Length: 123
Image (cartoon, rainbow, N blue to C red):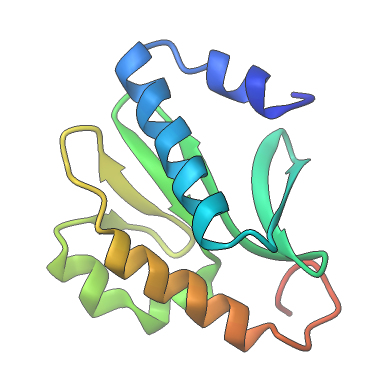
């Protein structure tokens, strides 16, 4: 994958693609300092060249990947929102609403936690 257009066009259902585009636009509007980079065949948002969050899609859900530490920190809120999660991803089914307030808290947490971080991933 070379760019966001390729990423969006790889999402087969138009309503899923539009939802992803809206999520990316929301992130760009709320965090204009972020850059989007393509790594490991996936678009990721970075701040001062360190990973903050990534979004991807599958047939059944939208995945939010903020790193394991952030999922652990917000585990109860993620579950209260009705989302399934693994150690590394939060799964939002296509029929679930995106809890933008929770998403903002998770992103803000990563930004603050990694404010002086110089590597891409947490160690």
